[in-house]
Image (spheres, rainbow, N blue to C red):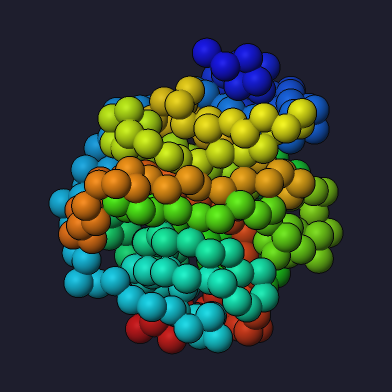
Length: 266
Ligand SMILES: [Fe+2]
């Protein structure tokens, strides 16, 4: 086991104030943390297989970022590019936006609710903030990210844009919370997510993670995803590759109450 990972690992049995404080402390010292014990690996494996069984590459869509409302519903977003534009990052990734306000098509909502509660506690917010939709013009972008075998990647960057959302909301700091849903050596063989830890080491943390681990990092961290199984054939109808779940706090740029949004969906 890598010593940087070991030093930054917190095993959790209860999300009490002392545990949250401990995780915050690890984050402050190391810029990242690995949290074990929050999610059952078998449940995560089952979720992955449900997504595999239910998704169709025929639903892949390009998303015009000016259409902010599209992501408030289930939306299978394919990103190939990102070389220009504000806060853009070159990448090849498929994202299953699966917001809590829309239908639970993958049986992921319970998992997402737990991830949102955990993120909220880290931010010092009420545990249920945004669980039922848009609150204070913010919502939880609960989504599954799929970096396909045969070339999925994301160029190195730090999370300037989303960190700005946190700062504007008056939150203390910024955290990205990533639920691990695939294993290096099993679901993909080469590449994977990394963070550049203090001291300059590029840490491919998935080599040391299990299904259901949560990796957290703050806005300072340079991170990316190195090409997933780059020399393997690309098959967009397959869910092979790297899979993670996220629950980022997003700003909703059009002011619209949750009730108004719900009525729009009827
Ligand atoms: Fe990022």
